[in-house]
Image 1: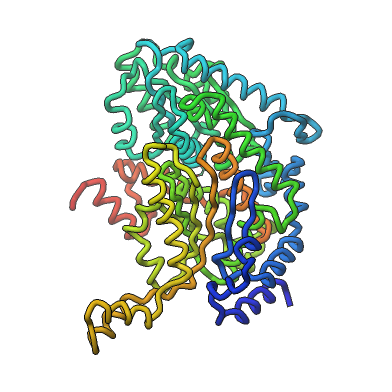
Image 2: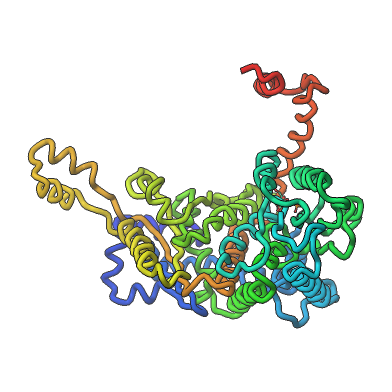
Length: 535
Ligand code: F6P
């Protein structure tokens, strides 16, 4: 019998138990929570009990999570399908030695960080200016990992924003760049082209559009461009001077790249010091991940809760619900992190996965989501494990009463999900409203909440740059641990290739250059309708 089978047996044996009943143990809230460096992770409102936890920890050990973790930090080429090391953690290290093939990568990391810092300071204080004066706006053009992380972090750190306004353009849809540039002064706008490969169609197309826009108003548009890329030959061909190019190595995956030059937009918005605090938060989480026992290790615990809900209990989705408006882009960021990393059907050795791949991640900030999709979470037929995030304190002292209401809503949701409302309670409610007989019965049934729905809560003191760094690194390592347990290579993304290839082939069909005879009838019909706009 495998540990997976034992876990499923344990799930079945406990299927009659309600989460609320587990709280007959007076110590459950503390036993199923961990506090690390200002974070409190509470996973007590799940069906996990001591037996399940010990099996999950055995599973983690049997999958050599600790060994794989150490291999990652030591520069081993654990991204085996691309033959690459995975060292994004070096980007947030304060110094020391991080070796790759016997070479210390840290001098290069620190040099790039210091060039970024000088550049950001000069832009922020006017030492580097646009042709019309000090930069008022920065437009970061990138997509996927070259957009989601910095866009999420820039919004998260809004209270620290004291530099130029930073905008993010990602979509190939011309509406995105059109609406972003509208109203900006081209002579006082800096454009960052952020693309690891400098080949991504969306980014390169938007970059050319921005250059054309600028050319109408500025003598030499290239002087108002910077690039974040590993492909220095291509940045040079685009006309961006080498001193404005910030590179990173192939051992940093796109979705893990926020910590280095891809974070330039964040640094420009908030300044190098808060950016450095974000790195420090990420590094503190690295240290915790490397040193804490598995049973007290936050990334490992998040991963085990995830494996329990997704692979053992079969709940396919995971809702990420930040009760923090400034984390509005966190669900989108985590979608890429989790789904591009662990959305795979074969294991590292090419054999079919024995278990489901990673979960479908989605979410919205609270309380907005409450007025949209929480109905299904509370009363739908499917169970959606929820992950709440909440700061103990807001940033607006004058609006402390609003923060209290926000927090009350967050705690109320996890309580309601667990507790539910029984038919008996619903009947009493309806009787209290004066109903009786069949009508009371009918109305009461609509007001039953099954409850027993699992959730976790991650509480942090305030959304500071340090806390943000901790939270992002926590999720990165969680995804890694889940991938190790499932046997997945979390660092490649072959699944995005096919659509890109087909899109390239379809563009000439839409322009009429190619008749698309090799396409299926549906695709031909749609292409014809788009080309001729015959609708
Ligand atoms: O969508 C696939 C992907 O390769 C992501 O992994 C990456 O973050 C994104 O495209 C952007 O790539 P690049 O930075 O090379 O433009």
